[in-house]
Length: 140
Image (cartoon, rainbow, N blue to C red):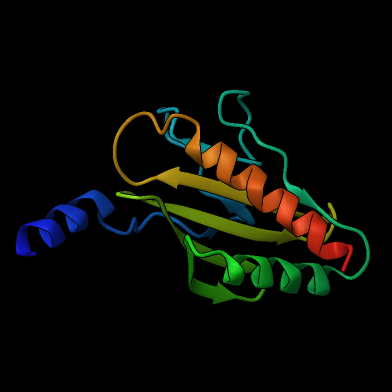
């Protein structure tokens, strides 16, 4: 069991210290393809933000409920208008961030792998799953 837990810990990687909000923006993606961000300028990393109608705080609360119900997600930091989550796959941990953008009526998103170069599209596909769940929760 000790070897397995050591291996799993190594695959999780260290929590990055460069995340968070800087000048009302999420951190930029690295050059590697294992990151997506709604604030990225280049198409390789760009993904659409989560959009909403109605009350911004209610939309952000809805996102928090969606994330809380996902078995692969642990919210590890919460500030007004900002959530940071660890997103788990079988062996790896990715970091997800969500920033409320009241003026754009959107929630800016970023998801990046802690380890490796390619994520085989996992960060993008997971964010698209969260988008669908967020939209579906608006209908309830």
